[in-house]
Length: 238
Image 1 (cartoon, rainbow, N blue to C red):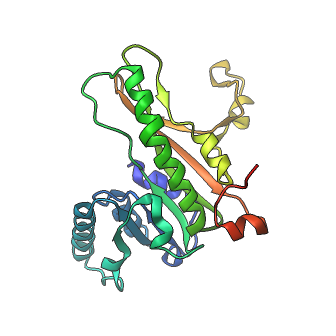
Image 2 (image 1 turned 120 degrees about the vertical axis):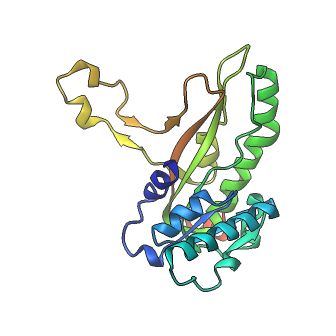
């Protein structure tokens, strides 16, 4: 399951029962369920109140199935909240990581036109991701990670289009964590195992012919300088 892979990419392997992680686009709670199975203190939010209710119901079902004690106030950990306003509901530097699949755009049954997708990304998706990262910076601890999905959308009359993730994360003082170091593979004698790049910075999850592909990234929050910490994630004026 991709959800379990993403949770492990947070690199939180010790004392998981003390680690707080957040899914701010929790949906029906797939990531939250896997996080609970991995002993994390899981929190979630979503702009859709129905999805919050579904997540709480699914969490309680799993706890009952496992015959575990219900964690204190678990229902209070899942809130109706826009991911663009996370700091309204969660304290600064509260979380040890974020694991999430944000909005990927509409479900396409056929390839859309380039201009349609470009408008979607510029007016909706990129502003959403931008504001999410600004808010995420405020509520996670220094040197912690966010593992997330971003879409690549194929068009009928042009190339694939994606959000400029690197621009956004640099703006809010994050850095990309390579998913795989290829130095060891490149040292192999088999030419089929040689790569031009030294690092894999993202992984694509897609089936043949899939219109919306999912790209997995890991980013890490840099240590704040004092000015940036005081502004809680607002980019410095040039």
